[in-house]
Length: 333
Image (cartoon, rainbow, N blue to C red):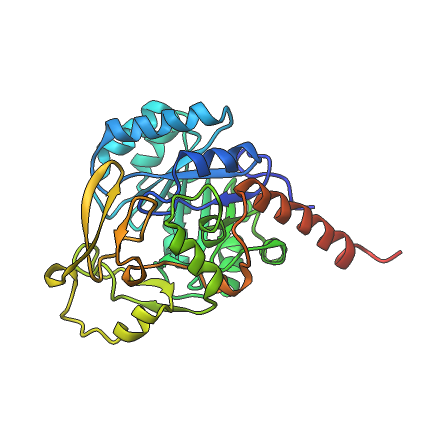
């Protein structure tokens, strides 16, 4: 029926690694305990001891396998070494070249490699590198968006590309419920990756105001105004908050470096100032002008009506998908 798991997990549902630290041990363990693939997020700087501590903390909350996401655009070699030493189930990669050498090294440690891609060319390189699965991200996705193609056109092309190879295809971008899951299956995916839906859960480490805005707002915009100095050339999709609508035409030469400090936060154990237009989303520790901070979200935001426990999100999607397939797509006698 297409609802069997991927990569050895019970269900083909992935909780995306929500940056910079929104998918912590509590969220990842809740997803793992419910039969999905939960993904921690590694820091955007080298801190292998902290990475080990996050992995071990998650293992105190679940005895199921899980993974961790790494952004290749930032320093990561020591973090990856720690991840492989800890033998987590899945190394998820994004925003950079997934090399054959890295895949071989991970496989030697018994770790599966799953890059997220945003174009057909990137999918081809990943497949040739020998990865275990590919997450295909459509432009509908929230947070940082690497490609320009919509999911409905890119996904089937990648499915055709890897046909006959032992590579699972996972759909990402604008999927929040059973209808998105079944649509992705119809396009040939074996699983789905959800970011915004898991952001709006009880266990997510997002600030309560951020979670509330995910319910209140139903519009997003694709932009580049947040975090230009720290991560240049990295467009993203955010909630169309009043702050964003006021500043969305920010001149291209402006960035966060000369802006006022609007808050403080602790990210992966480090205290930070938050400047206006920083790409840092507010987590549970953040103080200051929360309403003026970046709030990443996918285009399907209008479909999220409540904050739920992560396990319940997963259960509703799986059961809803089974019902939908049986009722609407089962053969008529």
